[in-house]
Length: 573
Image (cartoon, rainbow, N blue to C red):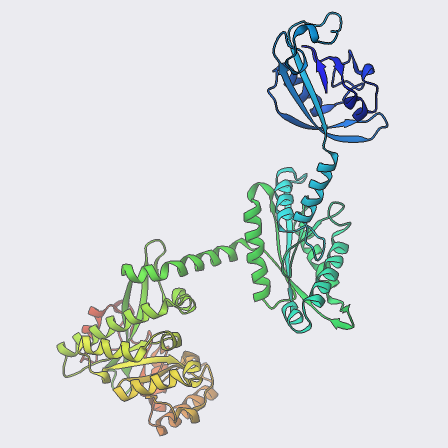
């Protein structure tokens, strides 16, 4: 301790302060406490100390480094405690105070306390190191990595930042088969190679961190551009191509790397990692063992997909969907025999969306079950209305069914309930499933198809010819109709571009289907030349823009019972 006058000079100091600084207490008297002869504060530490003296700082500690007489640095906690006027140290009467330096103000006094916290500081730093580093690889962990990212964004000399975020391909299999000990040794060996690629480790080159599991990150703090980050990614891929020899095992792993490089002003630590995580997923999805560069356009598409996916179920509940109908026409006499129900999403922000924009998402997240149930009910209600209004020429309605509807719901019960509620005869409902789904059916899906067929519902295979094309297997399935994929009839457009092989293939498929008792519908009929060739081959019905685009239900009324097809393009809408 030391007693200071109003100007911050030492009036007296105890022996403990002398031992701490390596000086005799008497040599400290008369000097300003922050002077080289006493605490030897400089820079910011001196400014903080003097401000505290001027303001008459209340009890409180300031951590500063002070110099010992032998030149070593000591971490200390310095406390300044103002003393009441007329009191000596500890509140003693003025008569008991030690001698005061000549010329010192008689009133203001401050008690200076200096505590050596070097050991505590060392232990704190050790604990912080343990808390901020990975125990397996000794690399910085996720917490320290984010701290460094924040610092780099604030202080980058180039104003740019780069990141390579990588995940090991095939690591989990090694960990599962050879155990965690070998897995940890492999992770440590990978870390050493990454450090070599990055430079001199934590602070001499690019920062290398292990973010958890088999995920690592290399941070380019003062990026000079995209090429620097992609060159680093190339170096990492090359380094990891060499096998690792771990405890008698020769192990091979590769890495998928997401690369992000951008202006610091345009991102945040969270934004940078979100972009890197997305890009890493792209690298995995693109085939692994490669790096992929962040693409704002691709990311915008992903964000749109996520937004659409999240809004699908609420959209069904809010009634944002509608059903349109595309005629299925007899090739023999151009009369409408049925319609295919096609769902549209009237999105409040993006407008009218076609099925290819949202049906795959609905199949992924399960929203296809409530959506499919709604389409089925809507289509059957409309088909029943047509049946009542045109009893002489009843139309069947064809509704697409996803395999997930069979697995995740009781499709048979749903169909039976809808038919009962609407009064539609089962024979006027056709359910379309894709070829790959039907050909691979077993167990529950196959039983559901059989139950629906027994109920009287027609089962059709959609997009036939794009999957297994196993006609022999069809004889064991309750299928009534095939819908030929549009790729089979595209070559029929004009005589000039006619490919004899196309006609041979379609003719053979139609003949085989007929021998199996199946009807055949050709999709994507776009012109009279196609329709004529399909008619000559013996195809039963056709569907496509040659006849009509998908139409609102009220427009179908005009086509029922007549031979007004093909519909002119303007009438098709």
